[in-house]
Amino acid sequence: MSAETTGDELPAIGIERRPGVIRLVLQRPEGGNVLDLALARQLLAAVRAAEAEPEVYVLTLTGTGRFFCGGGDVGHMAGSPPAERSAFIAALAEAAHELALALVGSRLLVLAGVNGVAAGAGLGLVLNADWVLVAEEATLMAAYSGLGFTPDTGVSYLLPGAVGHQRAVDLTLGGRKLSGNEAVEWGLANASAPSAVFAGELTVAEDGFLQGAVQALGPTKALLRAGMFAGYVAHLEAETRSISALAAHPDSVQRVNRFAGR
Image 1 (tube, rainbow, N blue to C red):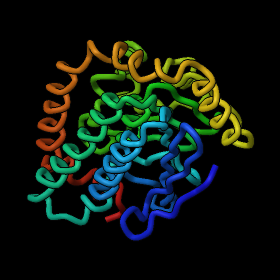
Image 2: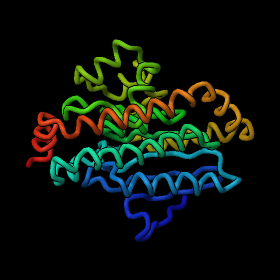
Image 3: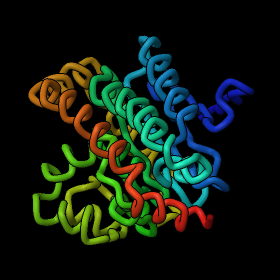
Image 4: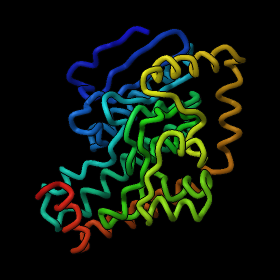
């Protein structure tokens, strides 16, 4: 698989390609591969660019280091005055939601290679993928309630369907964290692999889809996703309203500041 440097335009994303596959690699591990406003927009542009290549059928999202994606940009939020946080988080949620819709609506089969921690919006990226490989050593969590927030990035829409209502409550409100193997048991991932062989297993998974009838991947995905779209768009709008309203709540402000060490 050849790698492309992304230059100044996509500093947080590595793009790797081989016949039939484009892999988008979040490569800012020192910052937890968090989804800030710029990264959400850059990922959206990269998804659309991949779709424009007719010989590409599989799009893979993965990360580097200990993190797949550590969630939204809480540090930036903590640096904003409380009065501005609702507007900040509304803009971030809207960008994340545009990305989520692009992933579920893409003609490409979207794989998530969860190499490490997937929290908050990172869990949302996992849920918006079509097939998921998770490292056994990875950790998946919702993390919103610890900040006094409600979910975004489609988590509150997709999670109950994946794991059931009671388990969704346990993850979003009970603080439950899942290992890679538990994520498979709960229905959040298709397969797990030890970190030592994770990269190779992700390539095997990509190849497995490419060895089938690639012309059927996009149309089949479209049919599987067709029933969710009308409700999903409206629900994402509700998620944005809810999380942005809570961003200015005094307790949420304190939780965010404490999380960011301020």
